[in-house]
Image (cartoon, rainbow, N blue to C red):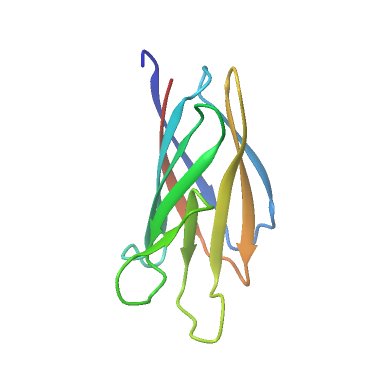
Length: 123
């Protein structure tokens, strides 16, 4: 992999569902994500995405339950724990890649949360 670039993005609780384009200057083959809850940095999400033949993602998230949880669909999954159902937060997938970067598709969980996402793209 000749190309490596880091990027940083934020998603505010006040935002809605939607797509975000990240430009890195090349078509990434692998992306590593580290998302952190801005108000509680002990809540985090580590995820990856690989674009070999299909886009697939896995992340380990801290949703307040004992120990980490696996999420085999989303590259980013960060939420507060709620025993009655989904908490506040975000999930996100990589919905596309092109010759200059990739697109993150965000889905808000309830009231959302302010999160910062550190990314490393390789290609």
